Length: 494
Image 1 (cartoon, one colour):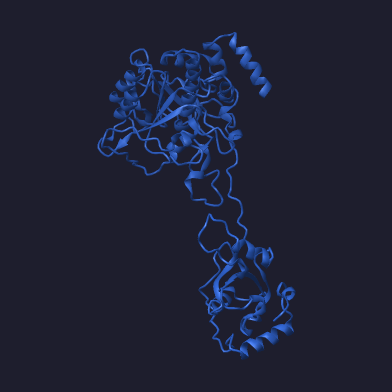
Image 2 (spheres, helix red, strand yellow):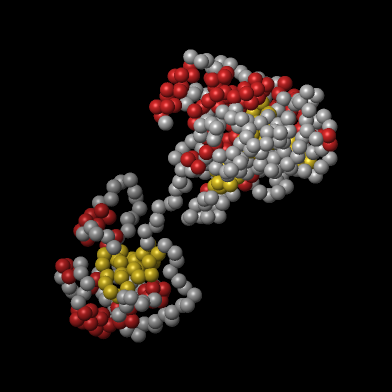
C-alpha cells in the first residue's frame, strides 16, 4: 500500500503499472472488463464539462481510490485524478463522524469524491459509461461549469423623452418631486383587451383581477397582449433601476376588458363597470377606436351613442375620462360627422387625444397623418417613438429571449401611445390636488392642461391641441408660494 503522502498525488506511471498487475492478479479488477461503445447520440448536457468528470466511489470497497487505479482502457484516458474537496481526509472524517444532534441521518463520506481530468480527445460520455460498470463506483457525472449571472434589464428611463421638461416632454420629472405628483391616491382604469400582468416592470398590475360582471370572462379577439402591456408601461411601470418608468408610477391600476365571453364587444358596459368601481378624481383611459362619420376610418369611440352616454355619466361623477382620437386620419369637423363632435352641441366631458410627432422627428408637435383631428380633440401626446414595456423589439432578455416578461419596445405609436401620456398627466395633476385636500373636476383638468400646454405646431387647422406641460399646469392650479420651493428642489436635483 502507498504511503498517505503519495495518496494525495497522481500515481507515477510505474506505480500505476504495478498496482494494475497486483489488483488484476488478485481479482480486485477484472482486466477483461467489456468496454462500452461510444454513443454518437449521447452528449454532455449544456452547463457541464466534457473534460472533467466527478466520481463518488462506493463505501465499503476497502480500497482508497488513489491506491486503486482504473482498468487500462480507462486509465489511458486520464490526465490526472484528485480529491474533489480540498480539506484533509482527517478533517472530512471529523465533520462526518462528529455531526451535531440536529440530524439523525448518516452523513456521506466526502472522502469518496474525486475529480478526473480527461486527456484531450477523450469521449467523455464513453468514459462515464465505462466508469458506471465498475462495482466500486457509486456516482459518475460531468463536472459543472460556472453559470453566467442572470441578465439584468438595463434602465431605459433616459429613452423616455416624454417624461422630460416641456416642450419636448410633459415634465413628469418635475411633477414627481411634488407631493402626489406621481399619481398617488389616483386609480387609472384601462379599457383594453388584454395585458401581460407578469411583466417584470409592471408590479402594479400583477394579480389585479379584471373588472367583469360575475360569471363573465375576458376574451382578446386579437390574441396579443402587447398593446395593453405597452399602455401600462407608459402609465405605471415601476420606478426602479431597470426597464422603464411610468408617468404615474404612484397610481393604482385597474384592468377593464372591452370584449367578454358573454357580452362580446361592449365597450360601453366596460366603461360603466369602471364608473361603478371608481371614485371622483380617478381616471378612465379608453384605449379603443371605432369607424366614424359613415367612413371605414377610425375615430373616437364616443361616436357610439352608448359610449357617449356612459362617458357623460362618468364625468358627471367627477371621473376624468381620456379617450383616443383614433388612427383613421379623420377630420371630425367634416359635414359627414354631423354634430357628433361639435363641442357646443355634444360634449361628453372627455379629454380626446390626438397623436403628434415627438421632438426626435421633424414633425415635433405636428399632427401625424394617421391621427384623427378636429376642434373636439383637446390634447396631443407622442404618437411615435415611445419607449415602454411589451413587444420585445428593443430589448428581450438574452438568457430567455422568448420570455415576454422581459420585453421592451422603443417604437410604440398611434393615438394608443399618445393617450396614456395625457392620462398620466391627468393622474399626476389630480394626485397633487388630492394631496392638498382638493379635487379637480374633469372640466378643470381639461381646461388647465389645454391652456398651459406646449402649443401645436405645423398645420394647426388640423387641430390636435397642445402637448401637456405639467410644470405650467401645476403653477396654474396651485399656490404660487409653493411653486418656487418646488422649482428650487427641481433645479438642485437636475
